[in-house]
Length: 466
Image 1 (cartoon, rainbow, N blue to C red):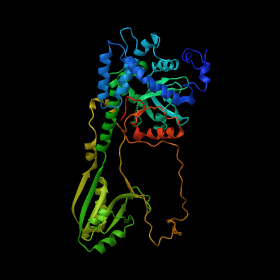
Image 2 (cartoon, rainbow, N blue to C red; image 1 turned 60 degrees about the horizontal axis):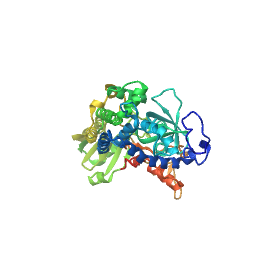
Image 3 (tube, one colour; image 1 turned 135 degrees about the horizontal axis):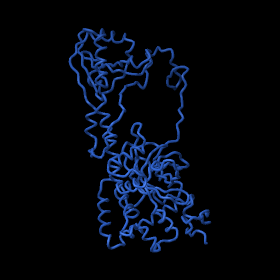
Image 4 (spheres, one colour; image 1 turned 180 degrees about the vertical axis):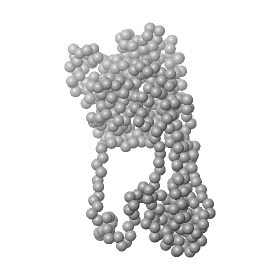
């Protein structure tokens, strides 16, 4: 058999061409595989419209998917029409094409076509990075099975360890390839990701067995993506609604001279100097104090937990605290120390949770299962000081020529971090698979840069471009 024919692949024997450096399926020729995969897309589309009986229906479905707001719609619809929808004889488009002799395809393209016919939806959990292009991932829909070697630059660059993705994958001789778009599944408390997927599928009327769930996800990929987004938004709304996300301000009028009130305040061990913002100076405040939180501190003055702030003006002082409960506690302690030297004039609470909830996108709450509406997590807001202010007479300061002061004897700690890819925003959009043409080193670096989470809309295939 001649080298490079590719006809042995998938037929129970290893072709000698697979060890040839010029073979497009060898890992060293990944760019060549991407180019061939891209050239095949036009042939796939031509084959979809080759049947006059189904041509108009397929075209209508693809046009509806293209007009959809979901970035997954077109890719999911194309794969469903190509690899999953069956005719009256129970055959898919690719199966019919193979039985007719794979007309119009070269040997290597036939190998890719047969591999594409095995495409499936997998719930991938990244376990290990082997290089900048390949990860080892476990398919959580098939527990107990060995990890899969998945090769995709965009997926690798956009993931960290234990990232979970709902992706389209198909097998090749050395690795599995990801295709189209992928949906990142966020973590929900202590719930297992596979349980979350099964709960949503069952809630939406899908089966619970592995084969049935994979086919249901292939047919309803967009609906499932909408459900995941709805769950995330609804749970975030609940967290904000149950939190004390309020900015509180209370104003007091001075009944005694400013200097007398300031001396009383500065004698307190839990009160330290603080910096004024430019806008606060414009309002007429001359200085500021930070009131440390003894309940969260060790009793030392070095604690950085802050109960609230006191803005000092010549005739009026203002207390500020994040949360209604911290503001009440700050008022109680402030009035206990200042007594009749100050007189309360009013307060205001700005509910930040309501403002954030108003900016949340609209969702269909019927997509959210009852079990995923329940959560044990709570949001607790605390305020801490990032920098300590040292006085000029502090003996612990060590000032050198051209150096910044720092406490004597304290070393600068350099924290070693794992090699991780930066995370994007909460809902950056879909992860898109590789695009061909990155042959040079510079082009590969640019391809990895473009595949970062904040540029996930720069897709690989030519059917979904932003």
